[in-house]
Length: 180
Image (cartoon, rainbow, N blue to C red; front, side, top):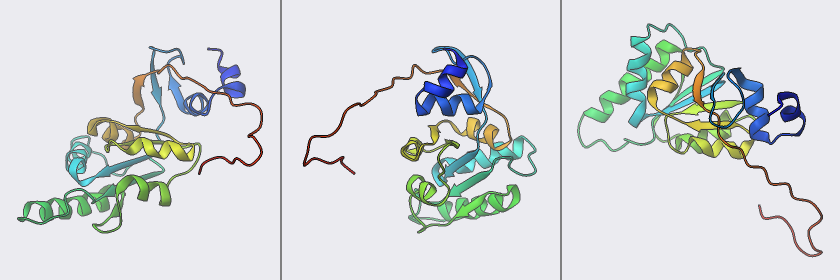
């Protein structure tokens, strides 16, 4: 794919990849490295991500916004979830993440509402991270280590996908409207 052509005529996905591409070629199947603007973690996966940040000897996150949500393991059948939540709060404070306490909402829609922005990249350790694509973000759900590395300012490595585009032309028939 010709990169200048992709910028002018490509899909939103291709333009976002092009804007954040640090290395590699935008050819399906090729390895690429992307700059990550934002990250999200939730409590079921965040504990390991924070431990990985400690192992990386990170002082502060290097993303525009990183948020730790507590929205999965809220029930307190014993002390373990409460201890995890205290650890996540202290780790968020230490590394400079936003901390969303229990009751603030589910990570992916809450993130979209408060931090989502068209044109940004988002790497999250929640499988629903990709929902932020509806805002015009390049939003990718991935493993905890990849999210920790993105928080540390390192690129997200992935295989360039085959991107399909659909071009709608013409007009809707009289009396019809797009579904919202």
